[in-house]
Image (cartoon, rainbow, N blue to C red; front, side, top):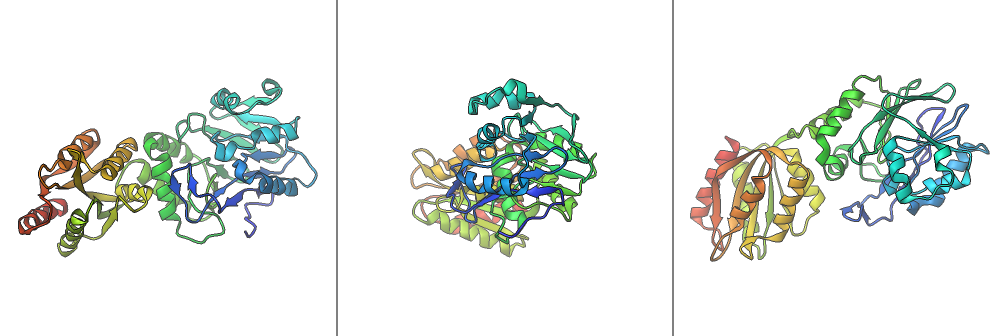
Length: 388
């Protein structure tokens, strides 16, 4: 990995993890993940978070290289999730004079993870707006509760105007892979942070009062240019606004008949002038990417086979994921399939009824086993409603 330059006095000491199979034991990360950690060198040296224990040795090597024989005076704990906090105890034991900086919630949780000697004497408890001067640099602490744990906080370095954002502005993918930021940042946001849009909005209001030149997240690239672009994306995502005008078709098919109907629906929508139509197979495609696309577009078609007098489980799981992540402010069309007692539509509507600000199309397409001309007529009607 090529060196990541932040400033002369602020060093990147993070690591890439390209061997991990599932992030948080559930999200596919084909290009790995980065665990970002930083060192601020001044009269007092400050480590900004540690990394996952999967990469302890590499991280320690990076830290020692940048310390160059010196010792850290402070460790700032932005977030206690183990992919960032995994080496707190190791660092505390290695440098017994080092102080640990966090908010009250941080220190409520630390004993649940670690046994740190003399923690009471070593802790520096900060609250909203508190500052820590370390020489030429001054750290200002910004509380960000429930983005996405209750102890999360950000840190603004006042002299070089750098914002350390914890999981905010994070992205899947290791740092030696060149790929579009938006896609994997969006997938990361909606699956990791997405439930907490209101809390992200509160944090963005605080950030708006700061002069920020560089954003340093705990996953993904350091952001130095076009910061307004990234902040605008976060504003859209966290306010649950659609990002693009388009239709997302999510289908769950058992033997292929529902799939054929979903593909026909895509064709009809495109022929009627839909700007963008995206489609996914909930039984085979990445669920996290399906959730990402559901939030990206302003309209969605749910197409499901019936199963056990209810919904085919992949669709049911998808809808519960959306509900849990505060899915809202979208137009939804429904297509169901069943041989003797189609039941998927009823079950889908019951889950959708628990979501906010959903416009449900009047037309429900009901297929009995295999799509026919009558069904296609209903699908055309549904398409007109969606695009109207």
